[in-house]
Image (cartoon, rainbow, N blue to C red; front, side):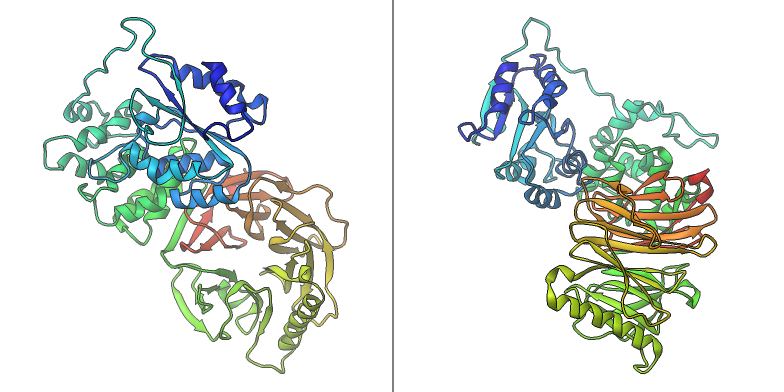
Length: 566
């Protein structure tokens, strides 16, 4: 059967369907065959498996999160995963062991049955000509109506190999076995993993009018340590009793909580961040756990989309935020609350903001044009900003490769950096008129994000940029640029921010696979933060406050600088 699977994967034409169905009874060797194939699949590009997602107990969402993570996109919902796969022209081979055991939760839930997962996720995936999938179907008849290739291992090879499953324990006996804290509450951090995994599924079938489910979902300890997939499946059903706000909180946090590599403290910090502004009870309960972590969310404006934002010099570090309609709002950096509104030019949708204060702004429009925004057109600020915008407008007339694609400021100095479609970065002063910028072509593809950092005590100015090839490069204008990228990954950087801090200069980079990388610039050490939101802009203060904004919301994180860089 191994040869049959290799022959199917190695076929280079369209003579075989792109979907391979692996059938067989229990203990017939299906899992062994897939494990054998996966162990040696990387030996040839045609047989290399790009994602292998054991599907037992998974819903459509959970399956998409893990598949996106393995494909390098980060945890994505099904519709966004399909969009990313459509844009990814790599030939992709997907393995789905135990797919016949997929599904979880109430019977009224759309995504509990394997057939529903097929319709929502798998069938659309294999419609793409560059995607193939091997699906373990057991002895069920799923996929029987689709165009597929079949490898059948038959029934168990010897009598007694396929033993019946043991009877499931009842909720009361499982709950009684959970260790207790000193004050008698369940201590889920010490509960056996098998108990945490199945107790919610058992509670869903308990004959107690939902009391067991309510008790579990109202327990913050269970939300931190319990099964992400099981809680997700339960909350997707309207029949599940849940505390107010928990469904919205869980929708934000669950894609990241499904990553088994996160520590308990990181799970607590993520759930705390998701609950801010939605459930005071849950966020305050989780705050002590979150504060023991290397980062802690301090405030959140969930569901308040932002196209971009920037920290303004002076004015107590106020944040200036552009919403998707182009309206400009100021926010208190300590609370996130809106403090005012600035007049903005009509028909401009800023994707970048830089300036020396609320009275002197440079806006990058989504069309690639730069716009100065000053109240006094005769001021020096208006002259400087107008010249910068005019310089790049004239360059754009000569070639579209000169179109600005990224704008970044240095809040601790009067500098602004502009990246363009040719891969060049231009460094300007906002404090004085200069006829031309300092320019260096750091990339060969368009720049996606740029920032700069001035270290007065060192006499250094760092300009950092990222481009469409997934590279991040650093340039000190008095020196030649570094020959090698600071980093390069198969993902895109969507935002950059830098600041001098008590532990040294730091760089924050947001990637489109739901990660923020924090670099200690002088040592090169890196820490990775998971993100709840898609990120289009970052701002970093010298005290370690990192603000993150994007189409899903706007929130602030306080970094524990000593713990991160001890």
